[in-house]
Length: 257
Image (tube, rainbow, N blue to C red; front, side, top):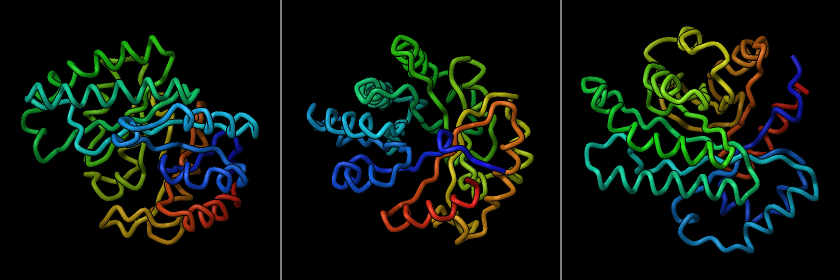
């Protein structure tokens, strides 16, 4: 199994990227830039120009992970939905300014609260996703819906069926912790060709620790072998949570290159 450099990205929060842009670019690896609400409210045009110029000069690819904290598109409270929509649409506009065509957003499905009222949750969610879909289509941006606390893929599959231009982002670590069954069974439930991106980090199967790959007990290599057999091979995003972990994750993944 060989992972081509074009398929491989490493997750980096926007502020950490800006603080060490030269160091990151010197690694010559693609980046999934994680955007938060603070950056959406306060970024400067020169920061966007600096990122775009640096990536373009080195021919390094980039994608965007949208904000996810405190967002709830399926809320029955229209003010909460309104703020959630504002954040997501702002992130899509920023995605265009960062010269990206791909953005990851969470499903924001919580089985503890939403499972017994799934239809209500989904109908409220569509009020937001309808506008997200329209903006993404207008901007030529692909939206990838990621599982977080999802115990099954049914919520994401419902979103994908409603919005055929969306793709799925399969986070192996999240399903390892929160999944109602093993990741292989969950993976088989996704419609063929619907998974365009996968997220990788390691953990102890109890908490979402975002350990360096190989430092926990998540089935990293069996999972990579599984998706490597897909006709449409998804993009792979490794999610380190520190600069030190980034370097170790790069070393780990070299075995597949």
